[in-house]
Length: 137
Image 1 (cartoon, helix red, strand yellow):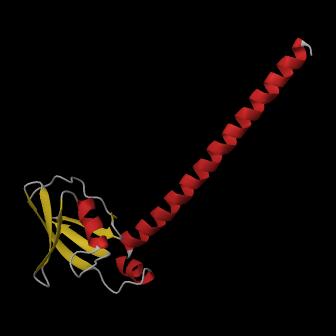
Image 2 (cartoon, helix red, strand yellow):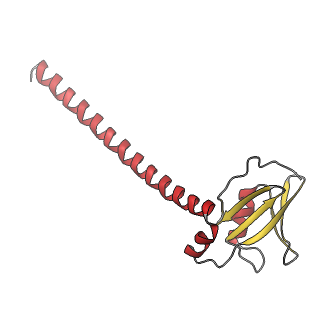
Image 3 (tube, one colour):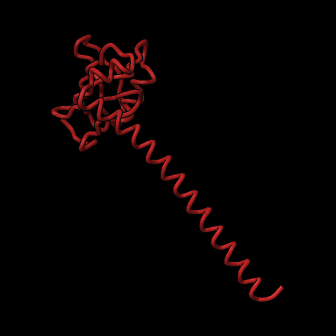
């Protein structure tokens, strides 16, 4: 085996390794873009037409909850039923607790009102992030 053969084998291996890395990166990027697209389309439907989103996700209505901040915790109240629902240290934690269920109620979809901020808690996630999670009333 000559030095030229060794160099050619090295270069072939290097090029094949780079091509495989490029293939892996493109595959991961495509998967990431597909996830973003699905998430983006759902958020657009939710923001532009919440009623359509609720219907497509087999929900008849969303519960409207009012949030109050006391210390480091947020308290969620259902003003219609005049009922305390749950508490959490962040909007995300409130959304997760609503989805898991508290007491005898599971609320997968809720509109959360914190002062003049309005967001949606949908299946354990905040769909429209609040600007400031530490805002107090």
